[in-house]
Image (cartoon, rainbow, N blue to C red; front, top):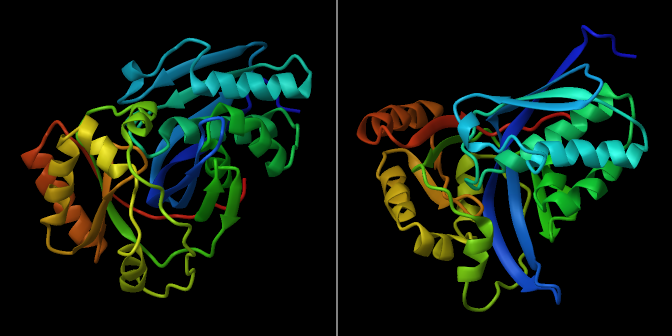
Length: 294
């Protein structure tokens, strides 16, 4: 058992949608999707310490934008796990919020997933990943894949996850213009037919091969998100203007955009320039990373 001085720290990595197709809609209104999801070496941090009750604390650059009530996703995840275990369980949960919230990179979902993974170990429950994913799906469709923490193809409403071999080394630039785009609003703005289901080839040896295939895919949420936040177009243009940018796209429902660069040096150079040109934007050079099962 953990003693009073024990603590556990776990990263909540940023999630990137390399493509996102809407392929249909269920009778209950939930959209069916196909998306290639990868994770980066950027992320928030969850730290767990012993407590008789569930206590939540938040710190970091974006702490003011995180609700401190029991309605926040971290506390909802913790309570869901405690209720499932049918035990009186407590923990002091500290979130260091380094990722912008409501930005299309799974910050809240990844925070909730890290909380579930961490508490499962901290409380010595030892539930298999599949159990945690089933518990997580009603809380948010991105949480199951954020529990997986590996490059994956997701289908359905986020409940069908296929883990893929790691992608070749990929350097990215992430840019958020400082606007929040509620996912529900983006789906409401979406118009037109659905994208036919498409197969994905996993055999990529180089970044150029990966970009070559991604160029035939897209993000169906980019047009409606841009209607809500036209600045997304400015961000995509700013990223694409840099030498070494191979492809740029919106992640999820936005407003964070990503660009794949030919080298990490080129991504770092773009980060430096955009920091100067747009000091109000959140700009980070990063790399894709698969995390071992926790």
